[in-house]
Image (tube, rainbow, N blue to C red; front, side):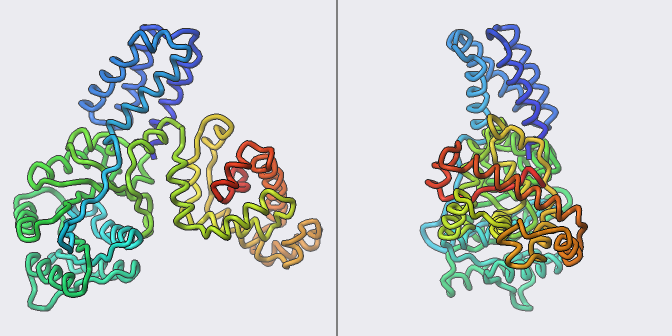
Amino acid sequence: MFENLSDKLQRVFKNLRGEGKLTAANMEEALREIRVALLEADVHFRVVKQFIEHVKEKAMGEEVLTALSPGQQVIKIVRDELTKMLGGHQARLRFSNEPPTVILIVGLQGSGKTTSAAKLARFLAKEGSKPELVSVDVYRPAARHQLSVLANTVNTPIYEGAPEETTPLELARSARRQAVQTGRDVLLVDTAGRQHIDDQLMQELQQLKEALNPTEILFVADAMTGQDAVKSADEFHRRLGITGVILTKMDGDARGGAALSIRSITGQPLKFVGVGEKTDALEAFYPDRIASRILGMGDVLSLIDKVQENIDQATAEKMQEKLLGDDFTLEDFRDQIKQIRKLGSLGGLLDMMPKIGPLKELKDTKIDEKEINRVVAIIDSMTPKERRNHMLINGSRRRRIAKGSGTSVQEVNNLLKQYAQARKMMKSFTGPGGMLGKKLMKMKLPGLPGLPGF
């Protein structure tokens, strides 16, 4: 996400750092390029105008122009303003003092409401809540069936409704009664959508709002639709009073205009972003972390959160010891890949890594997930002895491994070469004398061996 904007902003800052002194003239040029970059990222023109005015006011001050590192001062100002534009701080879900907390999930048809409802149920369950789902879309039986399937996937109870319950209000009220009776503390109500906003839809949602008194009304928007998503969110807020936004398909949006505009235009915060199709691909939205990611500084805090959530601590510590020692085998290499894949797509993980300093080469790294599947297949086709001692793998063994894994000898050779490079890289990168050795041991994070080689 934000790839295009990130690339352009980093070029602007590189040019600023190359200036011997920051002047009003080169600052104006930089602001002009930032303005163009934001507009090309499909950020709303009013938001861009306000953003540039704030940055200019702070950056043209005497304190910045005469600073020892004026370029760095400007980067800090831009980061602060981006954070403010995105909402300033994380907007957490609110919960009712008297359960169940009702969360109304609204949006246009095709925006990802039903999938987001299931993702949110899974997210809340992991946070310690006991959610229940209900679909009140009486117009599309397929939508209710979809939520039922997803509810089973995320192991969350769903209220299916009785035959005589044919209206959204009847379904919602019965679902809330069941939530009370079964001790569920959150009720997620997946509402019907339309291709366009119309009075019938709004009247129905208004009735649900009055009957259920929801603590949260979350608008689900498709990031890929850019400013159309922002306009829809604004209209829903004007007519219904939304309390937050879930932006879906963020992993496929290279521009990011909707995310950057939605808070400023609607006044309501982005609370979650969908970053994939799987039910675990929902992330809480942190404005400061996203601002850092846009500026190429990475999002290491989110990466650490993912690791702590998905990687067993004891396994991570054991792997860390191997990475710092001399006994990092192909078997460990394969297990490390499997551990890392628990965190989601490898491309998404690299997106969280800083693209500056020693890791700047990661910026152009492309990850082929199919290639990684082939790597695992090749290692699985080796004998235990071969996995533990790669020096045993001669020409005839390579032909056998290639045949067993459905690959070529060349691919086996490439893997062994990548493994040797990864082993050497991790030794220098995470060893006791390496730049991250002590930090990795302290954080108990697994390494990322060989990723740039794929």
